[in-house]
Length: 237
Image (tube, rainbow, N blue to C red; front, top):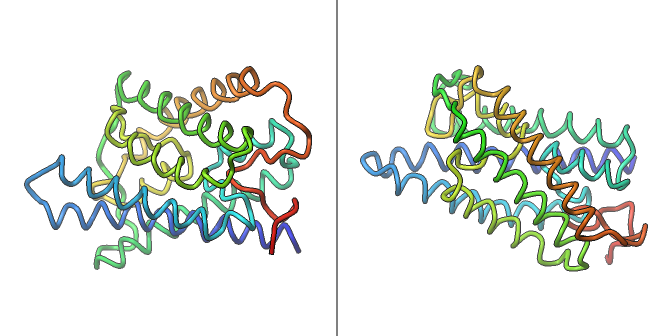
């Protein structure tokens, strides 16, 4: 039953994340149709602040991974079992799909409209490596240094900033990447561009795990490896 609650938290959290990402992108296009830079700022700001709120809302239940790469890294560090990691990843992908559909419908667009925006090239792929590496370093660096209470704000800050300083606008999340294929709007990505993005994200995640092991080599087994401690640990009520 405990795992079910955690999986539901991951599903709901990722759904809300995609509603924020896609919905703010659509709103930005409509509010600032002639200013791409302003559109990106509006999209980044809304996503960053919503992400902080989502992590605070569901983090105490599941750890607020909201990202298969965070989940797989947590599995590598021993924070989850393989069964738990698989359930988390499935919930995250399903939530990303539902969140995109809901965002489309909110703005009276087709529920599913396949994106045709190609995002390809070595610069964009490198941007995904950098964005993903930094995200996982922030997540596990903050958690493993005993400052999990700051994690929602640190993660939100990284995500909001990475929209601007990475060439790819830092998807940094395979579930989000898949979900964004279903909207032909500002945040959309063509399905053909997804495999290379996911490979770049995996490379960034592997590098981050290696660096975290170097920076924090002696972490007690009881130390949280997730964004915030979840219900399998002692959580104040």
